[in-house]
Length: 137
Image 1: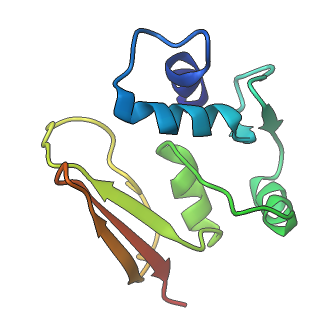
Image 2 (image 1 turned 180 degrees about the vertical axis):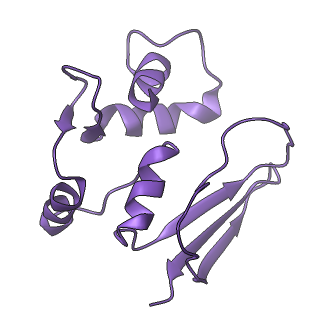
């Protein structure tokens, strides 16, 4: 679902509607990025993407061994599964200055707590704050 939503929003020329100028750098970055899609329902993906199936832990450990600048994870279910497997090396949360009162809860159902150590914090002019954490091991 996350892949399909991101593709509809950011894949040229299928972008749905005009986006603000400040969003263009992200759109270019996500369009160019190699994507790994974990799905049991999708039959195929494109948009510089590859389906990940089977043993999630084995697949992610293999991807982490490959060269590159790391893997970024989105969605709600996948981060929970990766946290349960102890495969997340770094967490980054961006808090926006808007309360919406609905939506999924990140890491709902986590079987054990994960203690985090703050590594960096960045405040934006918009009022959003990005905080980067590492798990305490």
